[in-house]
Length: 226
Image (cartoon, rainbow, N blue to C red; front, side, top):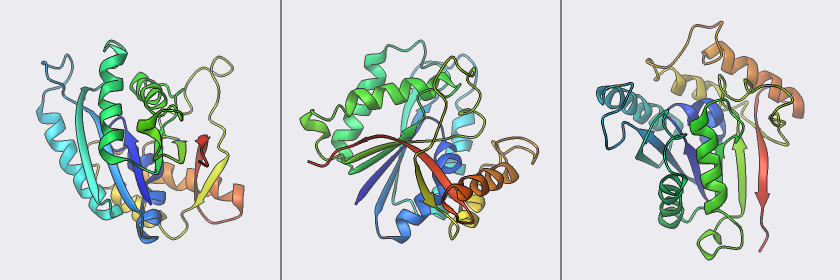
């Protein structure tokens, strides 16, 4: 099976589903990670290009630990997707789907606080309308949760992340944490969400949903048995 993990930013793939990625690889599946944002083609209003040179090296190291077979970097301008025309974002995603022809696709949760996550989730939904010929390879689409973004939207104003699919990562949690440690520019102290202790705590909580030591939770967006 060919699995495509779409990450708005480098580290989202590890935060959201690093344990599952490692498990998929161990099962013999092909895992492709696509990081969709970077500096952009124009001068970035916030960060210099050197920021992405550093974090992409961290991402490569993390992906190697997880066993990712292919890592793709796109260059939509990070933290600017709310002012980029939707068709530009959608075109990047449509071309990615055509190039990869995945069987399963994992995306950020549409109602994360970070607007980049929402814009990309929308673009994937557009690209993967199940009646499209270009989407015929896709059997399932799921959304992962990203600590520091998924649970911060105003309560009751937008839908909450309520996982209905769980993957046991008891055997791969340590590898997920090892990969996260490669993100030295992004990792936070242990009393913050994007931290080793934060990831451990969430994995333990999700594990209780299915009676295992550690798990990752997902929202099933669509399943298509053609």
